[in-house]
Image 1 (cartoon, helix red, strand yellow):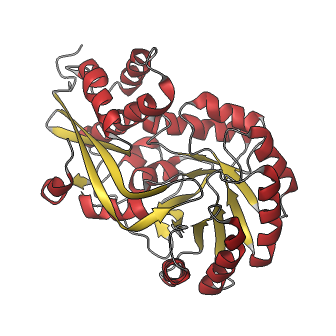
Image 2: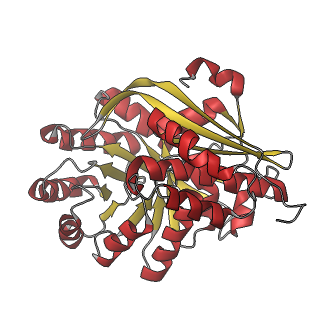
Length: 366
């Protein structure tokens, strides 16, 4: 190794649990707090930040299994570090916790490399566009009609042209909730719905037909994302103008290839906090290039901003209420939408964020 090569000097892993501002639920899950796993890597006088929304088990695996692989290694050789991490978890189960741990470390490596080079991450990756459209995402099934309308309508008033709400927990109430959402956002904004895999195929088909009157343009995970035949059925039979999307539970590139080969979605989603970090996300972006399928990111808007500005097939990113709130609370430099778009800060290297240590201390778990 060249003596001038920046070597990784320190790996820090911490977990923070942040209460939600209101109880949150979707079609299949309910929660009142969100756990942030933070990874920091030091080399060459710079510190790279990576993170994911996971669990304390992810932090432990990162600390015990992945961190030792990084000690004194070349901070610039991200491909080598990624390959070594994937090899190290071979017998531990790659999907799930292992992939989320790799994702957080990989993001920190990319942030560190960009900072060492003095470049915004979007510039390092190669920008395809200077800004990216966002859609406001929330509309939880735990919200009252008034809370739902206030949130979605507020995003549209702030300039967003797309908003998304949760459905599927109480299907008999969903049409009324969707109608209320449409009333709040007006006719010009696009309305998306997300069932989080709560429906059977027949239920999802009936919901898709019912939602036509409200102009729903996006139906996310109408059935389980593992049901590729069901997603293909919905894609073939959904009303014209209604895109079927899925992919947030993809942990490796092979998952996404299977989904695309099955022609299961109109728009593929990927989450860099799950699919192998920035390295994994850009590999998914290359698959979308090859298949000619649009790409959208799932949650973690600050992390996905430079990636979606670099990915050729990216059409928008998810500005998820829970994560956007946490990132504004705990990261200096977390971006806020302007007229429904996000733009990387050209004056800030890497991801463009710094962790607010003191502000986060009260949420520290381990």
